[in-house]
Every structure is written in C-alpha cells, then in structure tokens.
Image (cartoon, rainbow, N blue to C red; front, side, top):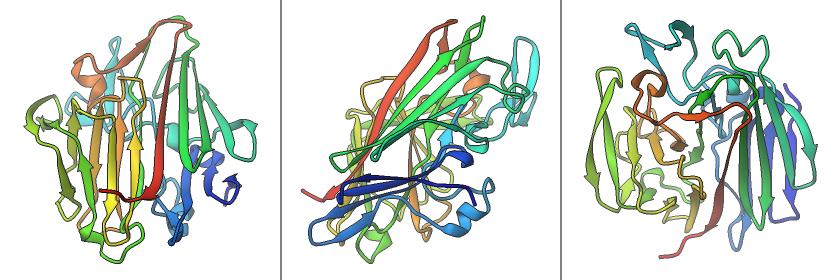
Length: 301
C-alpha cells in the first residue's frame, strides 16, 4: 500500500492523495451542518488495492490525453510525425508515481516529469504539476503543464471524479445532475468524427443509462452539480476560467453503481487522431495552467 497524504482544513474538510499511485485523489469530505462528515467521492480500499486496474474510485488524473485514440483501425494507438505510438486509455499519468515538491497542512503539490516510462508512448520533455488545496471547505486543484522540449507539445487533459451516490441520502436514483444548457456530442466510427445536438438545461436523473458515456460541450455555465435531494446535499464541479476545459463526460457502468462520473475534459475522445483543433499545443518553453474545484454544500433550490 502506498503512503497517502492527508490534507486538513481545520475540522471543516479533508482530502487524501496517493502520490505513488498516479497522484490519485481518493477522498474529499466535508463537515456539513446537521449531516456530519459527507464524502463527495466514492472510496473503496479494494479498488485502491488493485491499482492500476479499474481505478473506479476517487478522481484519477488524465494525461497526456483523455479517453482513447485510434490509428490504423486500432484503439490505444496514435500517429505523430509519421511514427505510431501505443498509449493506454486516458494516458499514463495515472499509472506512474509522482513526486511531492511542496506540502502544507491543507495543500500538496505533486510533479511528474518525462522519463523512460513516459517517452515510449509520449516522446516529449515536459513537466506537469498538480496542487490539491482545501480552501474554505472546497477542494481546489491547480494544474500546470510546461513544454520543456524543443518541439511543440500536444496534449489533452482531464480528471475522472467518481462521485458518490447517494451523497447523504438513501436513494441512489433520486440523485440528479443539474446541467446548464449545452450540446451533446455523438461519436461516429470509433470517434473519427462527432455530430452534435442541443441539450436544454435540466436535472438529469442518474437513473439514465450512461454506460455508453454522454459527451457534453458548449456549456452555458461553468458549474455543474450532482444533487442528492433526499440527503439535502450537492457537490458542485466548477470548471474555472481556462476555456480549454470545455467538455464533460458523464459515465457509470450501470444504474446501480455506487458512483456517477462527471469528468471535465479539454477534448473529446480520439483527440490525437481527429485533428479537430481540440488539442492544447504548447510552444517550447510555454506552459498551460487551469484551476478547477469541487464543493460539497447543503442543497438549495
């Protein structure tokens, strides 16, 4: 078992991160009036123990790409400058150890650099830093990616929160995802292209079958919330100011799972294969920064 880093915001909130397990955030909980400690993320020690197989808990890091790529008809492969590379679903960042470079009672900063483990699937020199910080009961994560290479650095990025359902109540399928007006994107031919349609603002029941993943974009608001009306609690995902985080993936394997995923992404699947301009591309020496957050809070109307 890896050594975990526990963060505390006094007696108000806590978070747990595993640097050796791909900077895996496995817990975020908060004390809420009349409800005691409430966990936002599904946590299962058996899932942590089987790392890196089926990391269906916490909030794994997705880099240098989200989802999968397809090349030459094969999923898990992409072609760059005429060379074919194998890369696992959601990239390698969640599968390799990160280094702790700074720590306080309420925050930790982790770093991943290119190495012999990353270069076979991603031939670039880079530095990726993540800071997890508890702030007034919220969990904020700040992401920085720096191009340390002599060539442009392409990537897509994201996070994969397995939100606990129910949060505080007793009825999973009474929970909903409060969505702003947006567009739903549908993949065609192994995500070689997408077509889209408008989706009105709504409270989407998590009894909806999301096993095929719902891809959303062009969000009218930078906040989405999973709401538990029976427990009177919600957890809000705030996408921050960086417009690169413009997509959401909603997923659960079935309608009985103890979690429902609301994943912020910078691109849709097959981002290296489609060439649709969704990749972030950094010039040598440039860096990318984004801040996102989760906030557990009592549910209001």
